[in-house]
Amino acid sequence: MKKFNKLAVFGFVVVAVMASAAVFAPFITGCDPGAIDLGNSLMPPSIQHIMGTDSLGRDLFSRMVYGARISLSVGFVAVGISVVAGIILGSLAGYYGGWVDSVISRFIDIMLCFPTFFLILATIAVLGPGIWNIMVIIGLTGWMGAARLIRAEILSLKEREFVEAARAVGASDLRIIACHLIPNGIGPVLVSATLGVAGAILTESALSFLGLGVQPPVPSWGNILTEAKSTLGIAWWITVFPGLAILITVLGYNLLGEGLREHFNPHRRQ
Amino acid sequence: MVGYISRRLIGMLPVLFGITVVTFFVIHLSPGKPTRLQAEMSPRISLEARERLDRLYGLDKPVHEQYWQWVKRLARFDLGRSFVDERPVSTKILERLPITIAINVLSLALIFSIAVPIGVASAVREGSLLDRVSTVVVFIGFAVPTFWLALLLMSFFGVHLGWLPISGIKSIDFEEYNIIEKCIDMAGHLILPVFVSAFAGLAGISRYMRTSMLDVLNRDFIRTARAKGLPENKVIYKHALKNALLPIVTIVGLSVPGLIGGSVIFESIYAIPGMGKLFYDSVMARDYPVIMGILFIGAVLTLVGNLLADVIYACVDPRIRVSGR
Image (cartoon, rainbow over all chains, first blue to last red; front, top):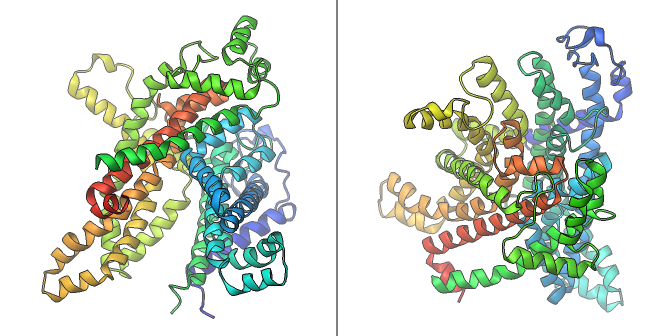
């Protein structure tokens, strides 16, 4: 067993810390993230409010901790949707080949032509913003990578003896795909899903920042930063902390993903 | 070469068809007619305008017929009229497009001139301090939210130091300037947006450059070049770099949709009157004809970007156009 590199371990720690902050949010901060206290608006970081307060006097730290819940769950659900959609389409294309493959591969090419952010914004314009909508929309505009990966894996796996053996004992196509091919080919997809979570968190924060993602008063790292624009030069803490949280979390997922990729890549194993 | 390009153009037709289908489908996802939703969202739209829209889009007809009508108009570059100000969508997009393309071209140039040397240097000295520092910087570059970087730079260089303007592409008294002052003024306004737009690509391309260079440096012909006694400079810059740059051309082509998509973010933060800002405003106003138009144009630009990358690739690498026959 090769050891993971230090950066990947750092990534794992970041991911674990952020995830536990999200899960145990009420135990970490005593403040209600929605409690408005206009007498204490725009207070710099202090003992009571370790990250300061926003223009409504809400405690920034507790908004950040609860925001972690929102931002991480959007990331996870969106990537979950991408992975499931990608696996279904990719394995159909890889297993059946022929016209099924041509249709699905062309569809992937077409989807990849759209600037993803444009596609997401256009869909939001039609369906409206909101946390559930953006989960689904980010998920359904990001499945192409997973589909390509699983298709390539299945193309090489389906010629192997164990698949022939399964067919010989009378297993159906569905059973071969679901029980034999997908479990064997899912590795690269899961590795890239780790990187996908990072991308989805970035997308969610950008959408919420633009006012098209998670809607206030529900806090997310992105929509906290919306206020930063109007307090630029007055309240540095509102700009700095949410941005750093996004940066560190995304960095964590990227480092973890790269570490996993290197670990499972047979060319790198010596 | 002409044969190669025309084959590629023909291959693009089904994709172009698919783009129109997806664009049409996305806008028709909404339950009920787009014009009804529009009318509910914004009371500003008049009943008469709504009826004209219904007629224009043939919303009383079955969906496939609506699609066919839309494609027929699209072929004449008629994208309909904006809900907001009744101007033709194609005019609105065309007047915004040059600034977005200019910023993207400038940022591609910036990406190239910084990322390639960094990638080459860290591949040549793999494991050195420079390599390790650039690896860390690259990972941070991947993780920085673009809009946050835009805010930070705006607050530091614009508000705190007051060196650079923070919004728009020209100053209020722009018209009174002479030509040199005009250029300086525009350049000052564009520094931050171009840098922000280039930043994410910078990290990615320098990473690819490093990988590609490492890959080439391990090939046999490099060993041959060294073995026959060529100076190291010549081996790296003449033999290795030329080959390592090839895959980067494709990567740059693939990064076009990201750049175009990112324009929404920095254009709306820096209030630049480009296509991204227009798109953002249209999404906010639920201006469907404009949204549909930009979505379509964005995808077509990507297609053109990929085609250009492939053509450049074929120009510099004869193997591609020969093997395609």
